[in-house]
Length: 156
Image 1 (cartoon, rainbow, N blue to C red):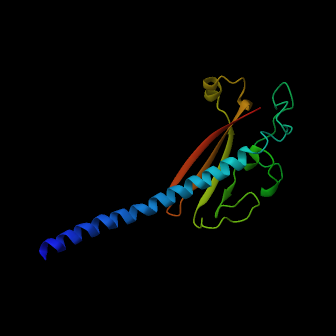
Image 2 (image 1 turned 90 degrees about the vertical axis):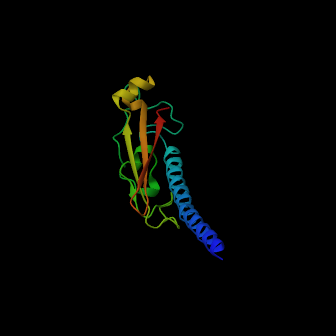
Image 3 (image 1 turned 180 degrees about the vertical axis):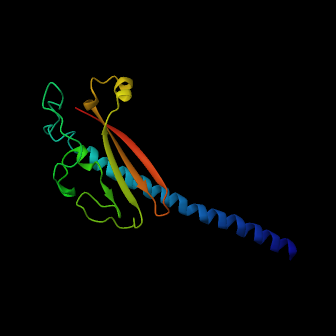
């Protein structure tokens, strides 16, 4: 009887640890889904307000000038270029039609879009800072943990 009780206790402790960690994987999955969804939506837009569809010619000092970062007076559903998303903060997260996403209560998504730094221009062999934008999607969980997911969008 004593041996069975000790074995049952050990099994209970092991299972409780496994159950508590199973919610972690669901949380990580949701974080990645949000970051990937926002990143794909943003990257599907034009590089810049002054870049024509198809990206040719790209905005530059030799062609049409690149516009200022940030929304150009558009609402969320009208965002048409990458940097329109700069400063976007949504809680709960919303889809591209500006509808709240179900199952993500308590999550927050923040987006930052900046031109490549001088060091990045040099490291990546670019001609100018306007040749690339760094998009960072930061997902914050209901418990306050934040994860940043940076991607680079080239001016082409």
